[in-house]
Length: 278
Image 1 (cartoon, rainbow, N blue to C red):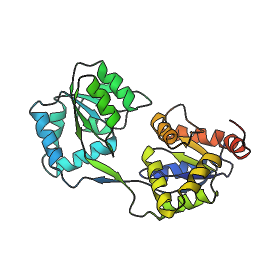
Image 2 (cartoon, rainbow, N blue to C red):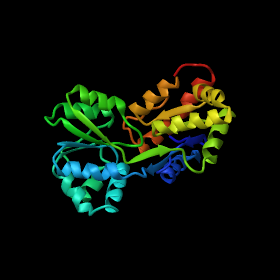
Image 3 (cartoon, one colour):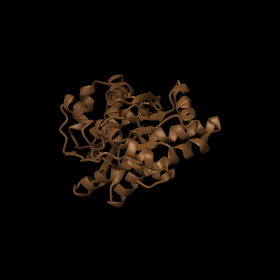
Image 4 (cartoon, helix red, strand yellow):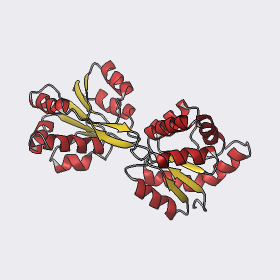
C-alpha cells in the first residue's frame, strides 16, 4: 500500500527530514511544516539545585520523560559542573524511563534503569509502574510543558512530586511554513495530516486563529482530511478539539504511524468526503 500521490502534511520538527523521507518513500506528496521549538530555560538554578538535592538524598525515584529533556539536563549541568556528578547523583535513586528514548543517554552516563515504561508510554503507564514501587519522593524530568494530570495521580498514591523544568515548547522562530500549512488546510488542498505530538495541534490552531482562519481549519480537519494520530495522548488531544482521529497505528511510533496512514488514508477520505462512516 502507498499514499498514491495524496498530499500529506506533517508538523514534525525535530525529525522533520526523517518523516518527509518516510512519506515520500510511500509515494506521498509531503509538506512538512515544523511547528515546535524546544528552548532551554534561561534560569538554570533549579537544575543545579536538583543535582544537589539528589546528592543530599531528598529523592528516591526520578522519572525521565524524554531523551531531549535528559540531553538538555546533561548539557546545562555540563556548563555548571562535571557531568559525572549528575551521573553519580542519578545512580543513587531508582530511575523510571518513559519508553526507550531516554535509555541511550542514561546508558552513556552508566546510570542503571529500574523500569522502562511500556507502550503506549503515556503518563498512565508511568503511574501504574510507580504504584507497584515503594518509593514516594519523586522528581519528574518534565518535557516541554507540565503534566499536571500525572503529577496529581502520583500524589494520589501518596507521593511527593517535584517537577524539574529544563526546557519549554514554543512556536518556531520561522512560522511561515506553519502559516502555509494552516492556509492549505483552510483551502482544502491537503489530504492527510499526521500528528506525532499534541503540541503540534495546539500550535496549528494558534496560528490559524492568528490568521483568522481557525474555523476553516477546524472544519477541514473534521470533514476533508484523514487525521493520523501517533497514540493515546495525541488522540485525546484531538478529541478535546472535537476532531476524532481516523488512523491510529498499533505501535505509537513514527514509522508505524506513516505506514498505517498510507494504508488507510484513501478509504478514510472516501468516507469523509462522501459523508459516509468509516
